[in-house]
Image (cartoon, rainbow, N blue to C red; front, side, top):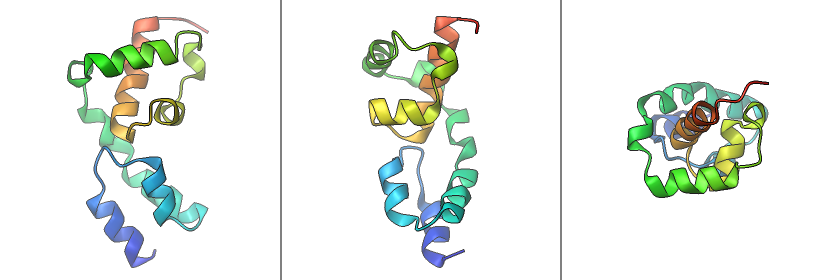
Length: 101
């Protein structure tokens, strides 16, 4: 793995955006490496830590979206937020909608 990628992963924060990741990664292997390293980022954010304004934006953006179509990547793209908060928002949306497939 390139030294630049390893350093990037060491300095990554939960708020790191997909655009930042895309700017550094040159191929699929590097993307996979980065995503493997950031899997646990969303586990430390709870719905209590999610600002009300973000929850309102999320509710509005996904009001017509079935829960099984909501992904972390989609949340990141629609709300332009980092991986950690996108994971927490996705979990919160799925739990609050309570839909079954």
